[in-house]
Each structure stands twice: as structure tokens, then as C-alpha cells.
Length: 81
Image 1 (cartoon, rainbow, N blue to C red):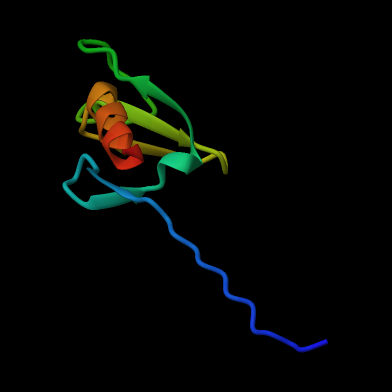
Image 2: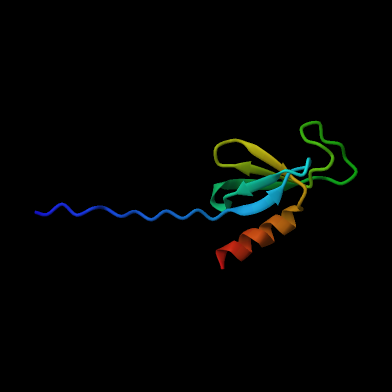
């Protein structure tokens, strides 16, 4: 039996978002477990007031972004198409 090389193609879909301090954050939509919108006018001790959406990832981490969760969902949807 001949030994043929195995070819594996891997593609990651990444969406560009922005942290409260302006830095760019690349998020893989497949790694997102949940998203929570910041409540306007209510202070949150865990994140800065500039964060509009908190993204929880499958590995237990969270990312704060200035985009709204509605915007993030739309960006994820666009990447699926």
C-alpha cells in the first residue's frame, strides 16, 4: 500500500472587534459561548463603562468590546454567508 501525504486544510473565520482602549481584537465566532449587553446607566464592577458587549468564549474567558452585541451578531452573520 502506498503512503500518500495527508493534506489537511484549516480555515479560521475571524471577526475584527475593538476593545475599550481602542486595541483590535480578532474573535472566532465558533469560539463564542454567549454574549451579554452592558446595561446603560448601570455601573458594572467587572468591566469598564466603555464596554457595550461582553463576549464569553468556550474556554471560559471573556472579552469586552465597544461594539454592541447586536452589531457583533450581525458581523458574525455576515461571516457565515
